[in-house]
Length: 479
Image (cartoon, rainbow, N blue to C red; front, side, top):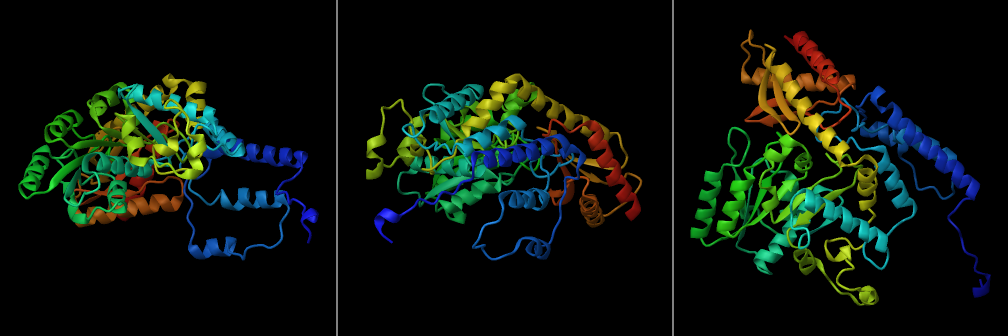
């Protein structure tokens, strides 16, 4: 084939076909948002069932676009749990919102590269603006502070710990020690493994009866490590643990870190957004003293996946940790005010995450988010009141930042701990088998307990009562 005979091959369809296809997708999303509360939130399937449905060789020839789309809508999107359902109580639900979903569609449709200023000054500016909103919200230094949007809390924690290691240890971290409670999210352990820390460089500190880090035991561990010649360099504090919503004593820990010259990283991936509420702000007192802070907008800021965020007290910490200057980027380095976010984190290629946060805050206003978060906290406390008035339920961890843990333990019965574990595990299993609610267990103080995370603003007290009635019905069948 001669050079002149080359013809471009266009992976495209006509304008009319694009409109028809696109409208069908928007209709499907609107239908989902409109009807999701009426569906069952739980889907179960075996690997064999999924293989039978989807497994095939890569197709050499194409299939009509609408046929593929119909298959995806009918078979793929129906085979996932509805994490935005009012009765999805487990893990950390993802309530999301329609405006942000459409914003993500725009960002993907226009395929905006959000790595640096030269590629998209508007996308970069919106990330600067929204990061500044968050800096102000958490009372971080507005001019000196900085941050970056990430795929989620895991990547935000990883970015924070790489930054802390660089700023505190330089190139040699062989004797460095990190401290955290035994309730700290596993993503921090994974991050430390990823960046080369050994298991014996991590100290898991026990917690008190409220699942907060034991400060006395933390101080003892730091003192012991210093005597033995190690380098204590970082404390990871919790602003809302996944298990119980507990918040470590941030004010006191900030003072300790200042005295001990430790980097204070606060993992607020779950609970950070609670600062918008009056009760949450009290619990999070001292969070502004962190060197770095992880928050997760795709949790309690009601954004779609993926969206995490890292804030730092000094934006130069990020650029001095991650900035590289390869030859192929030498023509796009602007002045110092034109931020290139690829210099502030691990990713070079970055999607336009800021758009959904920007559009939803602009559309609804911060007040709406504040009211939704306040409602969630109050709802969990109302659920606690209901449970405490019953002779059938025992509170294991009181309502904190919209998380509550409890178990079936009727006063009139004398069940052993082993029997209670079996009963509560079976209650969860039977609830999930109905597919009407997602309610799983966790383990606290060696006890199997039922855990509710109530951050969906569409969840009502009646939703919870109906679920508790189901739980009690199953429990009574077993005893």
